Length: 113
Length: 110
Image 1 (cartoon, chains in turn blue, orange):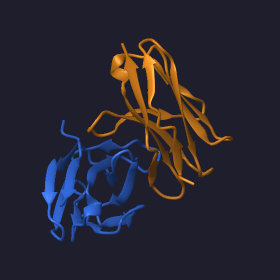
Image 2: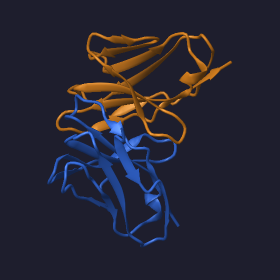
Image 3: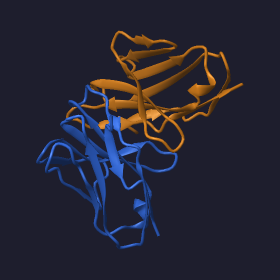
Image 4: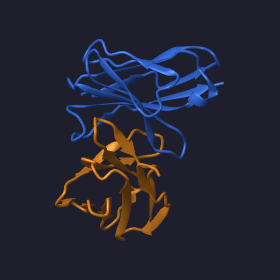
């Protein structure tokens, strides 16, 4: 019963490097989300998707890109890593829109040095 | 003004105590409300949804006050295992974006 799976769990990047954070869900959920959580702060929405082929910006999209080619997968791309992107990244999914709770992956801890 | 605001605490209470958290939200058109708990260095997990008429799940009671734009969470008979950060989450119209409070830290002391 996997739910939402994120990889990798930890990563250290150098400034200017790029990487993709992977997220996949096996619950056939249409809605998927990417958040970042900085220490002592709430989660901030980066991007979200309401279905395959559709993505929208959240509160803090700058420096990130996403794609949604399948229902299951919602990767997050960092093109030019910056120290300000050091954070914990959570992927989530839900069966419908705002009136349904979200199921979270266990996060990716990313440090940019 | 932040979309969702919570008292960060920390709340330190003895086992068996009753504790209440409040959360205020800025958008009167907000549609859905939830409480999540988050353990240290873990992902948020749904504790309960908050319904207009209020709802209870065991020792946990959630209330919604639309007129004053706040939701509350009451925990009765606190257990050591209730120690966590409690996140208030609001879905704001329009669209499908969720806004998270910064969380309220609870420590239950033996």
